[in-house]
Length: 366
Image 1 (cartoon, rainbow, N blue to C red):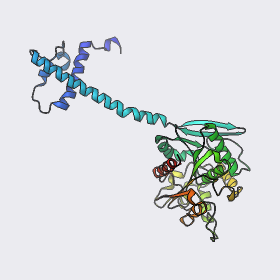
Image 2: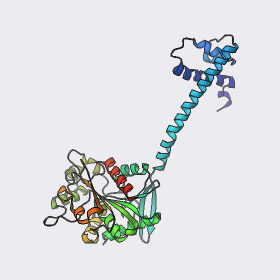
Image 3: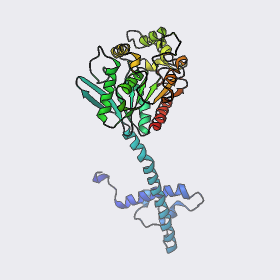
Image 4: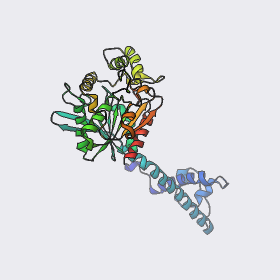
């Protein structure tokens, strides 16, 4: 503050008193009928009338001084209480926001570099996104889990973000090895792995290939990869497969893609526009080829990990008629939770319900 703008201390005292009087008046003077001039006359501050705006004159006797001292004590206590309340209320909020800010880590081994979106500290949850899409789909879920005390890691697959590596002649074992590299980089022991849609296959391969790194897996909107015994259908029908492929085909117009997005990914009444963006066609092609090159029996049993089969009620890719496949095959290792009013996209439709289910399952593993 410059010298010419600074007020003398007596002026600051008057202004402070005026503020305290306002606080005191609002809290305590509803039953008092004493005029405002009498309150100011109780203290002997020079030239206050020049700044408060009215002439103040009164005799100050012992009784009045005692009353003045008491009133000032009440006023100051009230002010301190307000300040303490603000500190208590604001401090935890600021800490939570600060701790939850995502940071990018680069984990490299050989010719593969994986860009990881990392948040917070605590037990680790690794989230693997859907076919041809990036980890940003899980922004809301990750923020909720981070706020609840988990460290959330979201590796971007090769070709998304800053992640790089060979994209041809891959299998699901290659993608699982990328995730294993990220977990090993943390050096914190086994973790919970969440695989959404295509990511569910990678999570299951990881649990099979590297069981020491996985304490449990969540399969979100996941095709089991098989159908019930005696059923002669593909796990994903040709019509739905076409809708998946056309949804991520950026050579088509938005108007052409929207019906496919609705058909494959969203429950009735939900707006598919939110997934018009976020697609990576070359990544989608590489992941689809890796899935086709990996036998289902390589990963169907999910290693020995406990499994949360987090199903979407209106999932066209993993329909209700095949909902019991994993539970029937793996028994008590599998817990089934159904998220209502959600399709295969699941996360943009019911992010809070997804986060709540992941958190609850994680607590059972500790």
